[in-house]
Length: 246
Image 1 (tube, helix red, strand yellow):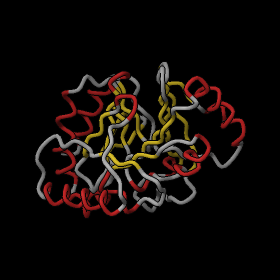
Image 2 (image 1 turned 30 degrees about the vertical axis):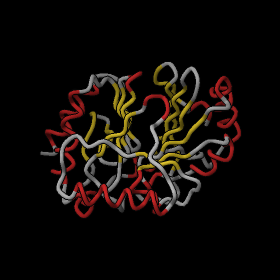
Image 3 (image 1 turned 135 degrees about the horizontal axis):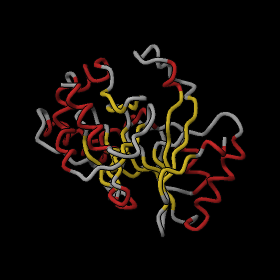
Image 4 (image 1 turned 90 degrees about the vertical axis):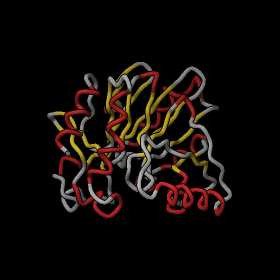
């Protein structure tokens, strides 16, 4: 399992593990999507785990490899979640590394881990119901006594048009980290099944509209939680996926 920890770039890592509570076939995907991806970003002064999931097998070699990677910044680690469905092993990672957990503000009430730091994804364009969504996010922060916080390592969160899900922009690596709305395939990228966004966003079009302005970013890589990543030509791959989803 330690060998499956893939170095994507200097200080940027990805690993996959089987998600025991998810049936991709029931969610209109094939069984190849059973393995889901987590990411580790290691900077000069801190490191971030994004949507981490602990492997169920050969865990000790995996933990030893992670320990080696984060050793230089062992006292300054964090866990960042992109949406509540990806809480996964956040509590285990937080306990092992004495790390704070960050999540989108509006998703706070659906995340079990406490204490919780929250962040507010940026909107690329005004969305129908945006004011109501912001009020709900503020109420969630107040209820949990949480405050919106900037993310470590310069991560910039953007709203994707679906519930309180965020996509993370990592400027230092020119990489976008997607949760659910964009999936990887052997041919590139695709939008998620329509049923994933029918109730939460009113269909794929509101999601597509929120994502289109991201094409103005100098994207090189697109890292996906489901399916293979795109490690070069990321902007073009995302553009193709959004065109196909129109």
